[in-house]
Image 1 (cartoon, rainbow, N blue to C red):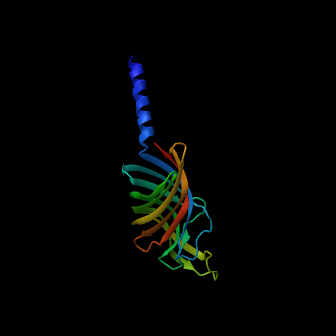
Image 2: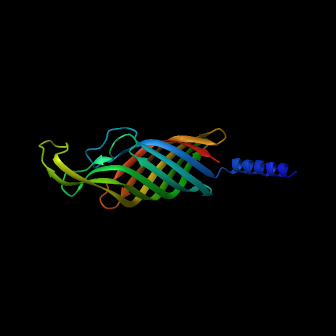
Image 3: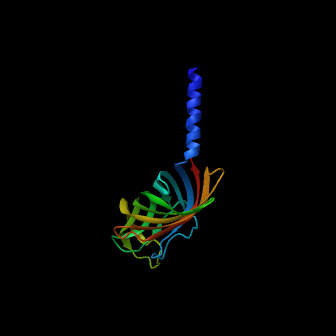
Length: 199
């Protein structure tokens, strides 16, 4: 008898989750661009992210997101070639916490806007000493570099389109966001596609 009660409780829980669908997990793949930086990798897609969100009230969700970049390139961007300055920004991790609001929804189509506070954590490569080689954007002779893990704080604004299907269990669509951080971290644009599961 206890087994049957346990199975019934599990089934009721699953049915309840299917009805409410307040939780969403998304995985995304996309790219990035620094509009104010001349030299950066030209891969169209080089970011990977995962996001969890939960509906708090109708049309309003809280979210947490992790983004890794670059996925394909060996460096995030090339900044400058001056002693004591950052030459390369290497691998970065972004952690975002914020909210989403459904701006417009009709049948299976939904547009939402989001805002979040963000922490960017990654490795920077500084030029400590060098003898000129005469070739711009190539490593000089006897270059000495130092790598440091550094943290930046900022914010993210985003737009999100979703098409839902399979009884609103799955959602798919493009997304677009703007990132701004402190301490001279360059302004950044992110874009991509995501696939989500609602439960």
